[in-house]
Length: 244
Image (cartoon, rainbow, N blue to C red; front, side):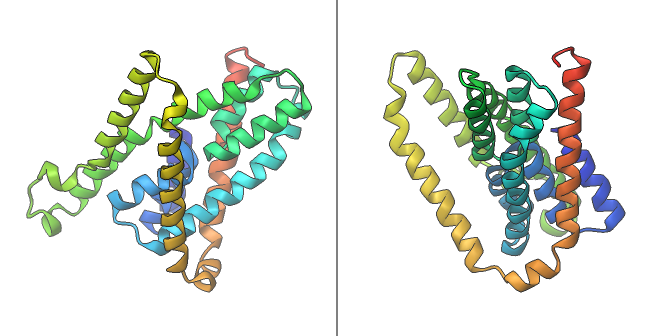
């Protein structure tokens, strides 16, 4: 997680990129792609164009990872567990993690890599909470004299949707531990996906594609650097820990 955030910060300073776009690409690469961008955007007051640009960059490398990583993992001689860790840490979005892991399982029958990759990815997703809180306080501090009159009001800077995220996680965990079948929550999961898709569509309808393409060079380069560095660190950690 730290790798992508550091890379995006350094490139933001070196290339003089827009701060919001840099933050969105950084958190999208480090945590969980589109979901992290959707969670972070309202906290930093990102506009539709910045959100659309970041999502486009993240999903470009999601697709590439899902296509390339299974063959790359085989060429590097990764074990089933090793590839599960690699996919779970180096692929941006949860859907692309599962796609890459499922492709590996198809190439290696009985590997059960999908379960490992999903657990690792969901663990990364939990980082939404501290990073979103940090960004809320960072943004409030950076413009405190302009927006908050030089003082902090918790209700103005605290992203309360984080509380609902934690509450939903606790309820789901307690219900599952209590013997409630997980299928009970399927309609809610479907509904949440529907709302996310609708939100992304709304952003798309408000996006100037031509302008997005013309200004997309630096964001794409930043996304590429984040993607490569995360992949190298993921593989390096496996070597350092003796897992490869």
